[in-house]
Length: 229
Image (cartoon, rainbow, N blue to C red; front, side, top):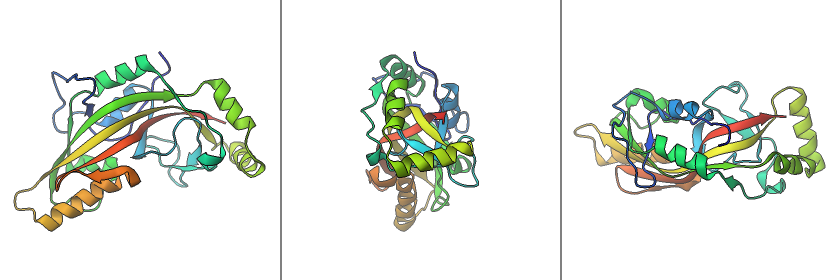
C-alpha cells in the first residue's frame, strides 16, 4: 500500500462500495480533515478538480504549507504532458472504508470547508462521500514530467525551488461528495438559495444543485501528498 494521505474538511465519512459506518461520528466529533490526516495526506482548503498527481504547485502567499492547503499552480497543467494517474486499488478500498457513512458539521466547522458566506440560516451540514479513489504517479512519471518542461515553466519551477516553495503532487485522494444543508426553522427560500450557492462555491465549476438544500461535487481532490522540488 502506498504512503498515506490527508484531506481537508471538518467531519466526514464516505458512502462507497455499499459499506456504512456502524458508529457514525456525532456533530463535531471528527472532521474530514482529521480523517485525511490519519491517512497521511494534507487536506485541501477548497476541494476542486485542480492539483492532481503531476501538478507543479506552491502555496498562496501568506498561508504556508500547513493543512488545509491553499495552493496555486506554478505551471499550467495542460502544458506539462502529465500521464493518466494510477489508481491504487488497495489504498482506495481503505479510504472508502474510513469514509463510509456520513458526517454532520455544525456551523463553526463550516469554516474548515471554506464556507463563510450565506451560512447564517444553516443549522448543520451533512456530508456524504462516494467513488473514493487514491490516485498516484510513479517517481519515473514525475521525473519525466519535470524533464519535459518548457523553458518558461522550467525557469519558474527552478526559481521557486531555490526558495524552498516548489512542490509536485505525488498522490491524491479524489471523491464525489454531496453536501446537504439542514436549515434553521423559518429559513426563507432566498436564504436557502444563498446557502446552497455558498456550498456550490466550495466545489468550483464541478458543482451542481440537487435541490434547494443540497449540492454535489464530482471528482474533487480532498487530500494531497506533495513532493518538494
